[in-house]
Image (cartoon, rainbow, N blue to C red):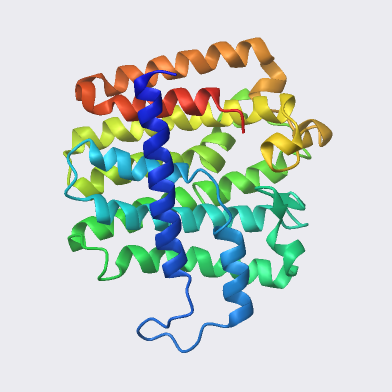
Length: 305
């Protein structure tokens, strides 16, 4: 294991622990200003859907993208990362529902609708989605109002109709009418790539980086987002449920087309190498400061769960 890879693993773990601690605080029983009550069962369902481990990759990308420009914005980046993780976890809670992907297992434990019920899972997802924007706007997130506005707009676009939620709708439609390759790329860029793109761009926004640097990190996020989805589809084809902590082989079982199912395993493995090279080229202007983000691209392409 290289020194840079060891450093990456250390950073990934420490950032995950920091995000987990912040999320636990945000999902505590204490009332915030203007809240009337926090129903205990709903709060428990939210905590079940969020405080269940995981690599916290998206918050990591926010924090480390901001760190390219120094450490001054770390606490704000941590809070924006936590907001993004609330969006991600809401999407998983809803994605697991019977009307969507109908999964019983997530991160090695019962999904929220199994542990509680479908109504609790729907409300937990709704509440996590709303909480994300609460975190961004809250006075505890010490950023200029213009930065908060930019983050709210970018996150809304990444998570909503033209991003993740729209991608989920296309994914459900793809079970009935298989899209062509361009359609698959669009679907995956929305469903999976949009939040990863936001994570990297958000780091630049939080740090007050230039428009050019923001565009570069946005493109880096798009590149690793595609790599993430190809790796995910490859794992769905080759890994087992015990390794993944969730059901595998579901795409094939539903006849759902992916780039991997169309092009094959060898193509996918080669394409992942190309995407890592593209990510490295994008980050070259940042020199040694980009070492952790370069290692993140390798990690995403070569992950095993």
